[in-house]
Image 1 (cartoon, rainbow, N blue to C red):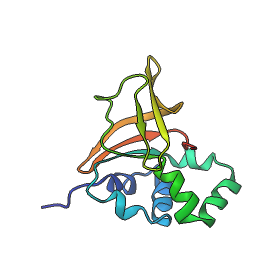
Image 2: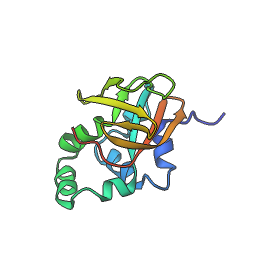
Image 3: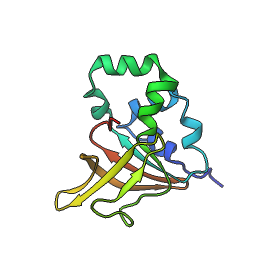
Length: 137
């Protein structure tokens, strides 16, 4: 039988998440996100990461298991937050300890004001939402 697909398999297989895949690896979080979970991952696209100032990226890469891991774990939640079970104003706690608040309205879905462009990509250990910008704690 094929190995169960994890949220990291979704990221690794996505043409628009090459940067996120590399950053998760650099931060040493790949194994966690392939683990049992379940997790919800808000996955910024390559364009979203490219929009960060280069100094910011350099600073994060200089401290991969510190600052970089902190930012990445602000994009991850323990548990499954699918659009079936969130409403406008639903708040969830990021693994890093910060708060993430959903906005759900006629314009679609956003998390902390960042547009969610693809919703509810389901994996065996959780769910991925694709977002258009990097969430900053």
